[in-house]
Image (tube, rainbow, N blue to C red; front, side):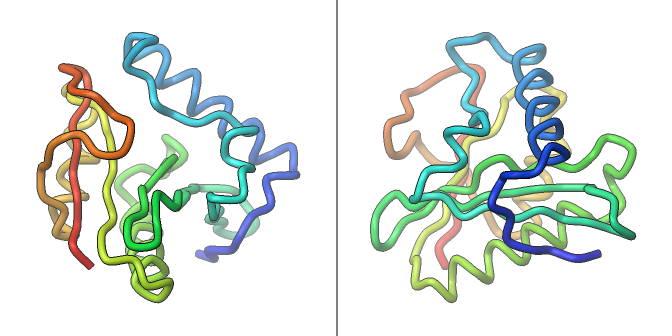
Length: 151
């Protein structure tokens, strides 16, 4: 597997992210959907990585700067056929290491509260993320779960 910075200019990543947004829309009410679209992920406060394996796109993830000490994990996704194969663990480890290297003291995330998101929450727990109150511009939402990790 190869993890590399991605400028989001290729058609394959565009399609991969569109699938992600559509899946989140099918699982979460519109007012509770926080998945970023391609244009939002291209903003200068976001660093984005793609994961390839044998030349195939198998995952992605991003780090959004909230302030000098706090960042948010965004758009962590594994191709459905590759789920539970270590893609997300490897990428999450990479992003956590990059957040530490960058000097962030805290890394937070929002994920779904529904049963579908249990594997994601277990992965975050495995990496030391703990449940927390909403952060940044988020508000309490029964469809959202908030987690944070002190780096």
